[in-house]
Image (cartoon, rainbow, N blue to C red; front, side, top):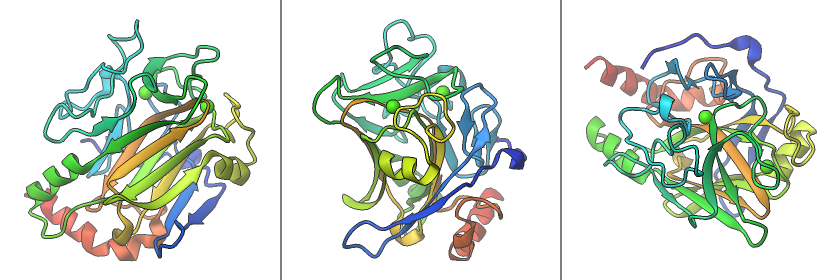
Length: 280
Ligand SMILES: [Ca+2]
Ligand SMILES: [Ca+2]
């Protein structure tokens, strides 16, 4: 994977929040801001670009066949009719290292562009994106379980400790008060962020499809102790849209002046281990 310079001018860290799941000692550092994506998808993580790649031990889900990772065969199972040649869940569990995506089939979809009363492309995103929809009633829930990927890399790295994910980034489009993202480790809730929390922090309005304060790149840094393995996206109305989901393993590179840099000391050992591995 190619390295690339950080686009510092596009960093917009207007707020940093720390949330703790109730009855737990865990805390995750949540910040907002990303880099301009080079594939026309709006915002991506400062750690990983859909075309140019990024730092080691990060993975990106773009929902575009053109920028899919060859390691992940991908699937068009959830692609909206008419977009089968362009849009897919690239990391779906069709290989030993794939991601298990669980949802009711009519509550998850991948498409390009906006359709009124269905889904809105995240601001400035002309590529394929994913969304959760309750189709007008109840709560829709999408689970991304990364256990297979983590098991694969734990075995590959010969880790005596199971690897986890200590960074998650995602481009959240037209954030609504009724959307939320939740992070689990071994079945226990580690952290979460709700649409209402994001809109309060940024001063955005619910459902706005173009305002940067309602279309934000969200970065979450987890400590080694709270590293997560499963992402659950809920929405209780139409719709919860997202793109450029980036995960960073606990062996990931962490540049200075980046989201979660305050946790750098905690990760020092992991960084050294990661560099040693890359020299093989
Ligand atoms: Ca995309
Ligand atoms: Ca929305």
